Image: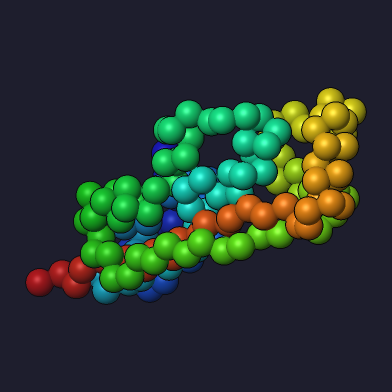
Length: 153
């Protein structure tokens, strides 16, 4: 992990949203004693119903990526105290194939290399499914973590 371009104990609060990687040691370094890290992150197997519709079953380790318990353990290993750790699962509904295409073009890591041309047969089948049975349902997961740097004695 590269060093953050800040001095030691520079901040009372560090926040992040959807980090790809959480640099726990660096966060702990730049927090003042008593300072807080607060983050909302993507949880495990987020929107996996859609991923697996296009890519097929994924290995178990793919589902466990972005595990909130691991994040908490990593925070503690960096010397932070976990104050709050919450996982939420949210219902996500796709009401038309245009929304699916937009989502997959915007969130490019879900189905790497996605193009309409490449996935036209699956898109046509999903369009028919949505038209006949209603929205395609997936589940988004997010977790919140709040960690504090202990006060020095």
